[in-house]
Length: 468
Ligand SMILES: Cc1ncc(COP(=O)(O)O)c(C=O)c1O
Image 1 (cartoon, rainbow, N blue to C red):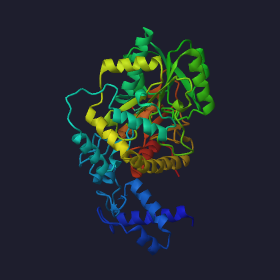
Image 2: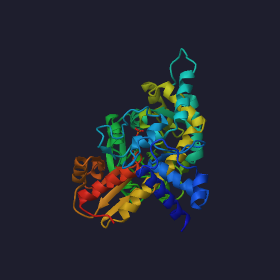
Image 3: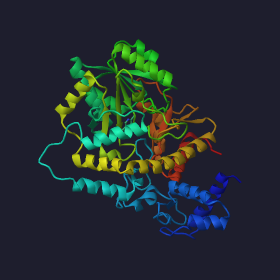
Image 4: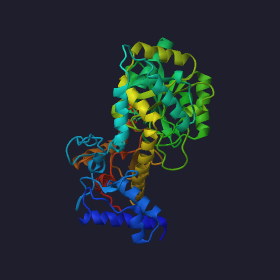
């Protein structure tokens, strides 16, 4: 048996011990050394198995501490999200917002990461740093706390392939505010409503924010390589285009380098701005990491938008834009000044602390592993069902599931909701009706594997197809 098969055996054994009541919530599981010796397998095999069990929510492992059966997990129970994570102290026993509406309702809509996986010690230290920051008789810098902007710039250099000067980094209240701010800057610069091209299907909240900031939107189709640059070139004068090149939202394509260069070339020739929404690029499950489009920007046409909603907690409402040097920078910075600061300074202090101390990087390392397990589960289960297809699985925290039958996505979503599982229909992301395939968007960031199984079981039931 290979290492993977042996690890699967260890996983099955520990699960069985919990299910038959040999181990109960809070019990220490045997140390990796002891179990490896007992089973005659390499210690690394047991470590891998424990990582898997942790990702599934059966046990909790923490470096330097004894691994224990997760609270709430017991004989006859599947672990729940709360059981898997509440012991971190992070949620203080409050009902988690992932479901939010009743014990049996499973919220598998996209957009919710594994917030409760944040190490309690790191989280508390960050907020202590915010509380300890000297009080000042002063207003906040509208562009954001210099320390946070410096940390963001450094992190981009490490993880996204470009390291901007701090002056180009501007803090915003989420991606929607970032897009609204950029729209306002463009509108002021142009003296008219900017024409903004958007991906179809694409990010609804972003479209809403830009429209209310006065943009005229034009939908551009996406294919397996992202936005169609030929169509973009044909639709007439465009002032800006908003793209998700690393993981098209929601369909999941990665824009290859050749198309990235054509997009940048088009923008350089036409004077348009390319807004890169880099929302979940930190999570690649297959292949090597994809650098940001901004890393290829030799002509200063890219506005890069990133944030902490997928990497840490969407409730922080903290994102940022990185502006290219030149008139767009000046216009957007002027709008930031006029709007004033939008993210509370103590939040920024806490975030800067999480970045400076490496807590964010450690957290990413941990959840990346969990997300990859969940992604594998979706891929494996969907592959076993004829007529069902999974997309968007190479990165990020959601999957798009499409089927060969005639069922409309909205109907499937409504029927799944009646069975207690909330997902989104791909059609909801369309700019023009019919641009997206019938399908659902399933967020797996905050689900345990048993919860994922339940969501997939309900989908198969609704579609009346049978998995192996
Ligand atoms: C395409 C896209 N961009 C950005 C975000 C993050 O939005 P925000 O920063 O406003 O929380 C999301 C969240 O689901 C998203 O889907």
